[in-house]
Image (cartoon, rainbow, N blue to C red; front, side, top):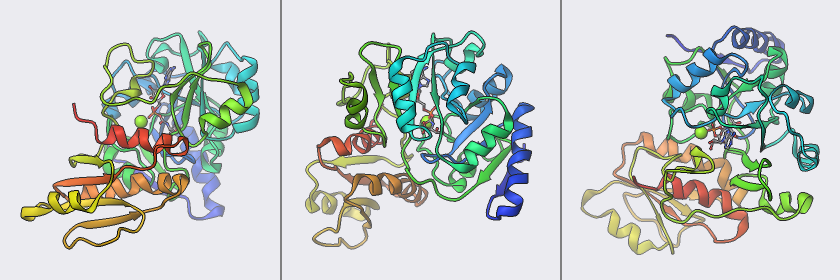
Length: 335
Ligand code: TXA
Ligand code: MG
């Protein structure tokens, strides 16, 4: 299959092109599109065959459910039967935006979207291309991140092409995504609500609106059975290159690892005291949002260089860095 790449750099032609993509989605095609977090791989959520093609294209395990994307909050009704007061409060405050809510699934939604489970994850993305596309398609859009299963998510159309080229019908290219990490996933089908995946919308912001929620920061490898969310597998969002986090960060380890001609890429936390010759050094921002926005692009870039090892300075241990720590832990997990 040839993957058509459509650049949306011209305001006059963009609307027409997005409508073409929407028609393709309605007919069962797979279209990758930008959201504010990462690129998504979209299919008509009401078409079980189309959703089945997502699992094939990504090599996604059948037990991993997919987030449904909508263009207005009212569309939740098409896919979920519950809408608790907490959902109303959170959607009112954070939608459109990087917060995914897990609700009780509607019988109208093909079970494959939910991997056969009783719930469905829903979000309304804050990206004009995504919103126009979903609205024009006229159906809810199932969309996991647009990457082969287990790989680092795509924050540019080039990343999507590299990972899924030849396996999907179209990529809508609107440049780099802003947030850079996948959405926060909050399960409202349990009491108290549980944070399944940390993201840009923080635990503190959520708790300010709805009170205490359950959460646990995974340390080390998690067991793979009975996970609340299969996307929470220990190893995920991972470069092909062996990746290691160092805590506390220190020049000595970088020096050691780069001995004997070993080619090392280093995501340094801020400007290092010293540059080490031969080490590909990336100076990462020291604000969590800026760091998140750059992380995947840097991992993709270093991964493409065929290095022996990627080393990442471990970021601070406070709540602000929860989502970044979560992704780094998975990127450097070994199975
Ligand atoms: O920012 C995002 O969320 C991006 C963009 C494209 O919207 N999407 C994304 O999808 O990251 P994906 O499939 O790569 O990750 C979705 C996560 C997975 O961990 C999955 O297991 C979990 O959400 N999930 C989906 N449906 C669920 C459900 N019904 N119950 C629990 N977890 C669910
Ligand atoms: Mg993903």
